[in-house]
Image (cartoon, helix red, strand yellow):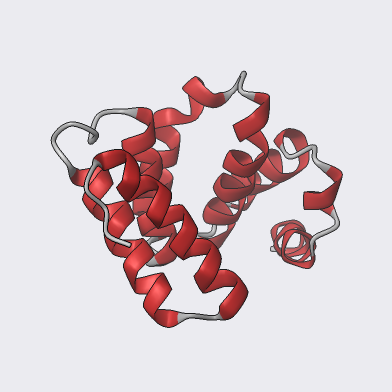
Length: 135
């Protein structure tokens, strides 16, 4: 499936990310990175919340944590009151902060802002939380 609009870039990026995660498909991961980057850098989306989320996702997948945190910080205030997105947002923010050694901020995001029980029982969550406590 080809993307012919900014919105289809976003949807295909999400779908390819899920394929990469569930099937360990490296081609899908590469496509997701490309789609998120092209959406986030497009002139019509670069200064929007979805555009910044896409760039944060791209840098997250590239493990470029400082760049990821820059984009996440730029939209944090706009997502504080969004119950649907805040669980995922603060999960990503907490892990990104921990990955670049900002453990105090990671603890705050993971403990105070991630409230969905299914997230808190995820092994990845528990491991990042433990690392943030220990270091």
